[in-house]
Image (tube, rainbow, N blue to C red; front, side):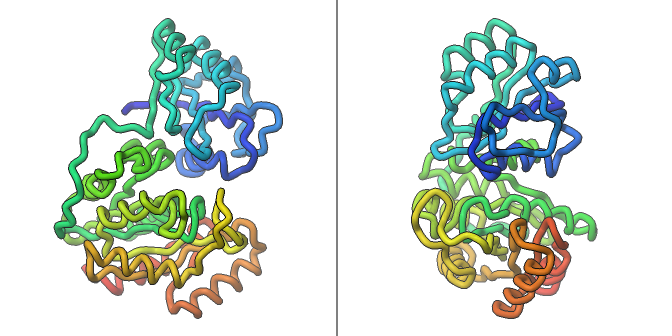
Length: 336
């Protein structure tokens, strides 16, 4: 789909920064596409962009309002509908990654029809996927996995792709979630795919390629999360990764949105290898990515050094440091 730019990012009145991770992801990786943000009273998120009204954004050239939030169930709160209708009436298109289709909301559908606006539901694909086959295909793949949701799997895959391309390696970022699709302009939001076809969609996302080509695949959820492990497992089987990177946020004590305790990094490594061997018997872990946003510079350094030594793997923060050590490890283990 072609989504017209620039964007006005709508944050609504979300209760924390993580709830606006779609908007933040687009700002971090496509800042030149973003004009400003719009927040309702009591919004607890901030992407750092200039706050704008709909009228101000349109006067500055905004073409699409992007609903840049995620929430449990992917619903669109009723009190946001009026703001979206105002944006349409002012001349903007609307894009969202939520599970609720924009066209299924009468007020939005009617406004779009009246004003000729485009409605983009990036979580939904018009492609019919086959079931996964698990047949070995050429090309190399690295998958970001996590101890929890929202720990940095997308940023890790994006940063891996950037580092590989800097080195002249053949690589592509493969988006598996709505934010990744908005950033890359292609991909499939796997959590909106019917369960029987998740692994097949993952195979479609990362198709056969040159033997020295790397797909850097965005991870989803966690094998240990009681809400989302089904999507995580389907992605693991379908993407058939040669290797994986474990992503972790060290200040959490329980998984996001539930009361289950966070698994250890070693538990994630062991479980990913056990489950991943179904479609790639040679799967292995090549590094750790730590989201150190809530740690001081010194504490982050000490923590990453400790984890690197404990697991005998390169350990980085894809934003704070460099993906270099992990790509070094990949090149060492998989020489071209």
